[in-house]
Amino acid sequence: MKRASGAMFGLAYGDALGAPTEFLTMKQIHRRFGEHGPARPEGDPALVTDDTQMAIAVGLALLDALANPPFTPDLITPMWRRRFVDWLNSPDNNRAPGNTCLRACRNLAAGRPWVEATVAGSKGCGANMRVAPVGLAPGLSDETRAGASQLQAALTHGHPTGLAASELTAFAVRWLADGMAPSDLPAALRARCHDQRAVYHERWLGTLWQQPGMDAPETFAARGWDECLDVLDRLDEAVARGDRTSDPCAVTGAGWVAEEALATGLLCFLLFPDEPVEAIRRGAASSGDSDSIACLAGAFAGAHLGVDAWPGEWAARIEYAADLARLGEAWD
Image (cartoon, rainbow, N blue to C red; front, side):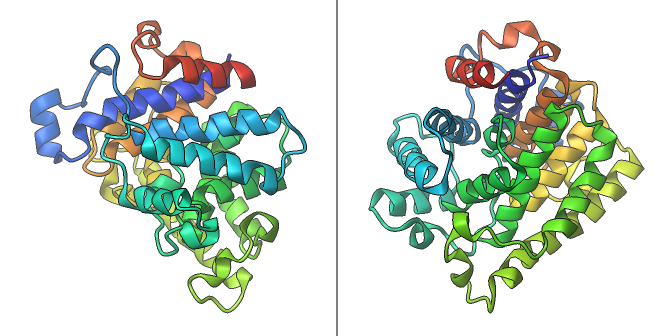
């Protein structure tokens, strides 16, 4: 089914579909694109945003690291730092990137230790819009996948909820690629929140927990998992409501912060589990951070259904197709 390719291309398709609607109201979206939002990525190439650019940066560094085992924090951290700084300095970094990513990457470029370079209080969706490759990379233990997904987030977003939401995003992608039924996802994510509530990955995160002035690493970790549990309650409510036409942000949030991006991206996917194009259209036709929401929905849909579920002609037009194909083919 080529699920890794499906997820990588899916996140880019969602990103490209949601880019033109990101700062529009629902009324403006409907007026410009119709009731269901954009129907296809436009342009040749169809341009993506920093969401896809940074997901590719995460993925290419992972490819390099996995080719030089053992996979450890000491191996991957400088690789991610280099890829993030390259992204910062790229002339194509002109897609309205988030302030947190820019600020933290400037600090990384200046050579500051990453625990000082990160923006400690930020839990923006930039922490988890790019984490899908960590979910797709084969052969990682659960502990390693968890630590790596949190570390890639922590390099820019130091808030515990950004870390927890990134881990949940990576595991959702992994579980779907392994064949989990979409309807089982919310309960599995909730169980992981409870299981991991007191777990702090010190080998991966070092002294990050001290940045906000927490009294213990377990207290730091618990804050993130509790906020994710809260938004999963809202996800359950929205899924039970089953409203496939209204603004998906109405219950699970606008997606500017990590846990809401996860929940609203999941909602769009769960409303259309076997209709990937409709899932990303729902994400694009939203009042919030539409490119990130649709990007995540596309990653989930692609991991579930594989690359052949997407319209064939899109692959020839999407920006960065060669990088997306390289990552997908390496892990399918």
